Image (cartoon, rainbow, N blue to C red):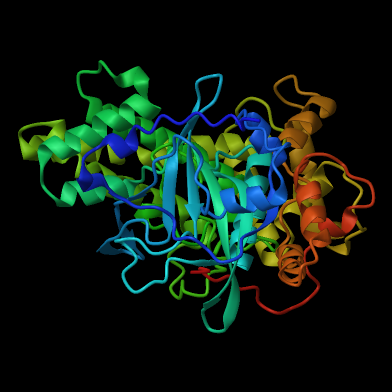
Length: 482
């Protein structure tokens, strides 16, 4: 029985500059924890006739699929603003699988052992963070936000040393590619124009073939990436997602969300929310995500200066004009997203005040971000006294008056809101419960949260406890999970 792998490994055919040829380091006792059968089907892969022992070998890297060609990719990155030469220090790209509809996907093992880029790391990953990435990346996909996906998690049978001993695990990550802003930074730092041109042409061929014949491909790529990243971050803001580590090596050129280390979803609305234990200054706080996106895009544009125009001064001026268009594009997309969240059709000069007044009230009153919009959609939640506040009632009257403009109806507005406001997000305490149980070999809470998060916009009977934040006052923190 063939699984259906069809590898066409174009990235590994690039010169040695771009990667290291390396195989995953074998593990002692692989054990498959979870396989994403829905995603496997979307990839035209059939694992139904493969026994668990064989699957465990496949998803631990002990048995590589025929046609695969494993590499660790080279890249650089501004990590919390500081430039570093990096690379896949604990991940191996085993190849690019092509589906029957001719879509190409990277298949990557995360936690697969040391590479040339590991520096002082052991190249391994812990079970908890790998299962966390599985939950959050699949939740993001269900929320209709571009994201890498998770195909499987396998335990390695080996313990890894962090602050304490943890179970080792490997995640199989699926992405339309793993080319990052940091990939361009790595090549640009070498100051070899032919290598930069190779990467530019490869990226356009893979992700943006519509600009293949453009007169100024690097400039068009910058503009397309501005558009994609604006769309992505506006979507993060829509659902209260905080990435937590928006380094340039974690910005994918495809426009997908990549790397789910210290990420989390905001409960109480506070623009300055930070969950990451290492983000002491709030650089990657919820409200800073658009600002950092522009900063990362500026670093990307810097890489392409030699290709934009032979006259460096002119090239910098052209690139700067493009990057400075970010605010206007972002604000327009953010406003339209917030209109959708509030069920508003058409434009009104007072919309911005209506939106900002609601957010200000939510911040002052410590309202739950997701559930406030559920309340406005008349979703039956617990009767929360907060929504009887007179300022909120006055705001609601203004909102209801606005709904009647532009030939809107309440039904149409509610339908628009239901398409843009999830009822279920990965509530942080529920994620932690699932991970803690999974580490004790109890997968029931893990499977339950996955089931709930598959349909985030639908009412789900007897799942109400997944709609509320934790009642604990303890500050929630996330960690990089390295």
